[in-house]
Image 1 (cartoon, one colour):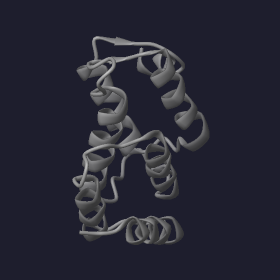
Image 2 (tube, helix red, strand yellow):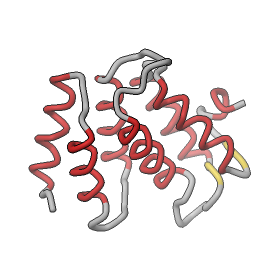
Image 3 (cartoon, helix red, strand yellow):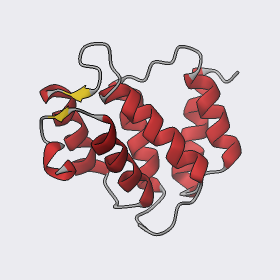
Length: 132
């Protein structure tokens, strides 16, 4: 099981290489499974990683990455304990800010927006403009 320092190193390697492998995604998944909690700082790191992978909407560098990214961010904003199944104002503003800062228009982002649209009963905040 990877430590926080090892995961941070993996994230830096991905950002520097602008590429991700299935093995790296597996290490990230194993780390997240320790507590199943994704906080906003970790979410921001995931957006930064996705940003580094580029903006080709047709190409998905690693399907494992897309699945991990979508599951992790959805867990943070959709399946939280306060408003399960909904994105409240604060969550929507945070998510909208992440898109404003890190969006590259790739297949991973499209998959996240599709998942949110399908799995939420209501969406508020800045992200609602991208969902509808």
